[in-house]
Image (cartoon, rainbow, N blue to C red; front, side, top):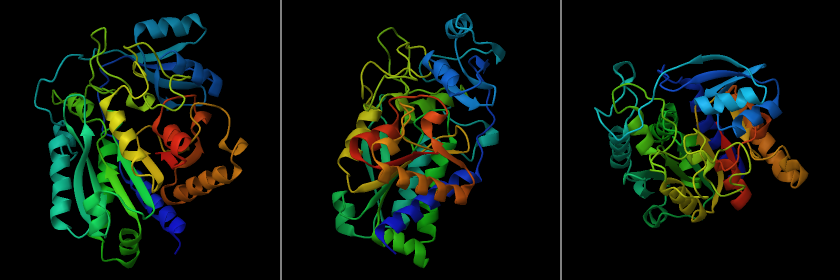
Length: 368
């Protein structure tokens, strides 16, 4: 089996885990609104108003918006079709920092670290755990390195073709931690299976389950979900948080993000202004043997590939790469039955992980 086929297979295997779980029920301590929208252009316009779109329907979207955003939308001709109104806490951490009891099988930050440490202890011939950086509040961003070559593990780099899996750019998307963690556990539990052993022997695999630990911990700080999306950096005006998936440097701030610090899609004061995105940037940029990258979200049952910032297709400038994106996305879809599409077919969004990974480094990157 060629290196490309191995990468295709391990990417599909990782993608398949997203189909086996569902996000927890949450309260909605912000204004969760339904807005009329009939096509991509209208959805993109809504995103440009600072709304974080969570669900797309044929005639509307659901997303989080504050009163000023809704007023601006109505002024521009959009209809607010429905809303849930609750308040969200914006202060520091207080409380038990754990999930509601019905979801206590999910991993908080400490439990995620313990699970990764257990994988390393049980599989020293394949696993090396390390921190790739610090969050805003000083938490380590943990990465597990799967590679059968001890020299590669010790130096943290390899000449083997690489694959990167990451989760939890958005704090409230707790399932996106579980999927890459489950994937690591699956590979190691089945390390003697000939197919899995071939992956571990031939590929350089990195798994980063929790990119946004501060936001994830804040979201469960009271023992109930606060529906927090961003990280926990303090902005110049005293508000909290930047949307990490609008903070990457490629085509940053060109649409589908916001300069409003209160917005759920606040893009930050500058590209890579946040320590979390800086850590991912530096890590990926120092591991350019990586050929594929998969970032997990809990948005919908979709497989998204570049571009997100533009309606233009990769096919217009690189037909070969476009064919690879299409083939890989369709292959993943046969495993998990998700729908593959270009990200901007939903709505325009700039500064995201996959546009940056492909646009800057040519890595075939996907959002699930």
